[in-house]
Length: 454
Image (cartoon, rainbow, N blue to C red; front, side, top):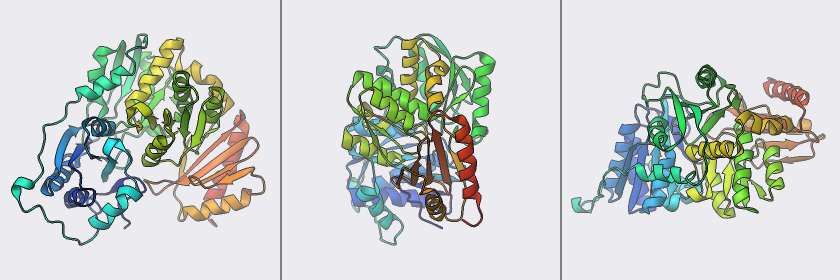
């Protein structure tokens, strides 16, 4: 069994890879390796997450680190409070959209800076998975102090400040929390916004009675889509369990690929901050590059993953960054991703232009149709990528390996990358306005991936 330490966070099966003892040791290791004074700790709604967060906090306290608890929250609340409180690190117990028998950790450092392999995770892995003794501090008085739970109000006020100066029109909005953590935040936002929320699977529920909230999976979109149509809503919004990603549906109940929202939000940000850098992931990117160029911004590519994006956002001082997988990063949110600020930016734009989401995006979808992400399980991801690169090399204008395999041709492009969080190979394709070509190239590449000789 591999290590639960992944490219930019910690995820593993429970209890084989992650359990209470692991979390307790992780907390101690953070104290030993990073020597923080205070650490923010939060957790999602999963069955084991409260106990895991408690063990994590106890490990920190045992080695003299103060703990600022959040209780059940969204990952972005950990980011916000880490930056706002001046804490030295933030830890979120969550498996995000992974299956029910998984759990893990997302981590940031002071100022909500990304925790990377180089600055934290490698050292922590070496200690946590070793036999190195991690004793508690001998003097009880030197142990850490457990503070009161941090108030959610400051975070909610930060969200509301993003639209305070913008005229919002009344809308009916389906909000699909998927029995994750988003519901309580939406309840606090609603009295301050001119929206009628139609709640679907709203209450956090550790049993996950409707399955893992992951709207990237087509079968997980049905409830929100049906609710939009049945209620005549203006749009729908769904979140994953820890709500650092948001997904939108138009007034017809049609799912909107996150790719097109990246370009849309980039345009709104560049109107207020002309010439700024915009960060994008290379899975699908032509639409984003085109819009950023039209708006006078500077488009910069970055490998997929929240730690990579947070780091690149800071390096470039980018005003905004977006991944097609529905992570949206904002400079004035400590360069971190927020599944709440993203949908607020969208409804503010729809209000300002007095259009539907479908009408606003129609031209962009037609100009740059995409396949959506297609997942495969293969025995050797790298070998499949290399074989496809070899087979198509003679026709490609460019080939790069910034984030998996990206190949660009005259009128279409592909990206084929191994997931950083799941044992999957992910395919994305796009074309320049040619839906028939998209279908043809998708069929060809899928056949190559499925070839048992790979």
